[in-house]
Image (cartoon, rainbow over all chains, first blue to last red; front, side):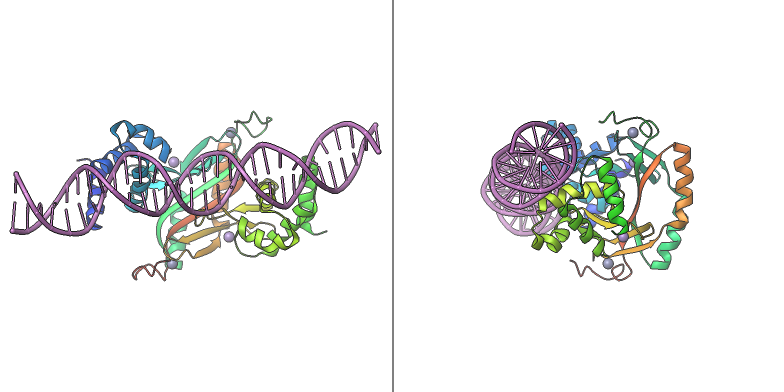
Length: 146
Length: 146
DNA sequence: CTTTCATTTGAGAATCATTTGCAACAAGAA
DNA sequence: TTCTTGTTGCAAATGATTCTCAAATGAAAG
Ligand SMILES: [Mn+2]
Ligand SMILES: [Mn+2]
Ligand SMILES: [Zn+2]
Ligand SMILES: [Zn+2]
């Protein structure tokens, strides 16, 4: 069993839940994908194995709670996610014009944030630094929109 | 005319749009509110002056583009905003349990971010640092959920 | 293997924030 | 006034996400 599967199973058992075939399939799909994904995209990958979209939506919060995935930039009214294991935390730069998403290291800010958290007695679950604006391709020129 | 009204008018004219009574009323409401607000909340403040909810939704993107308001933490499936003028950029700490929102200064991180932006040739429009987790009230105890 | 019982699931209906279509309106230009 | 362009309220549409419910599954026990 792969790392993230072990971790998910452990998490589920702690809640009295089971690692069912559907859940395992969703987890696998989430980790097979190395870009950001939304519920629909995940569903596309696995509907052939007749896992329902409802189950995808039901599993996503579990993966979040288990700390296996994280919410990223919301685009087009859809929540998007990315898996965590093996990926260092990073900032997301979203171009408002071409919707490109650029990622940069977060470790520089990490310590400042951790320090603040200590002062606030805040238990951090997730840090999300999203910067929106225009990427270098779009910053001058007109709107070659979407 | 107040500062933000001048700025909005200028922005609108640049787009060939007008500062209508409805828009002025919405702008005023947005700046009368010193907490985060969503479309509905804004609407509650001004529906007496028969401004429609649709117009609120149509005006919000204009205020965003004009740089007068910014999107903050999304709660309960609703987009929330806050006005900008006169408010220094700040981070939002969202408690997943009690939904409390704490704000802290961002200026410490600002320079690191600006530096990164320069390297990326990215034109920053908006920075949003959202940290979710558990506030000090909720971090130990059980879920007095809500 | 069979029973038991809580959990899970697919399918489709329901929600609900946000968006749109449209016909009536305003305001400036000609 | 008449033309033109942007605006608005209202109601209907949209679409992501959630919920309902009856049937399926799975672990544990007998
Ligand atoms: Mn990412
Ligand atoms: Mn704020
Ligand atoms: Zn771009
Ligand atoms: Zn709390």
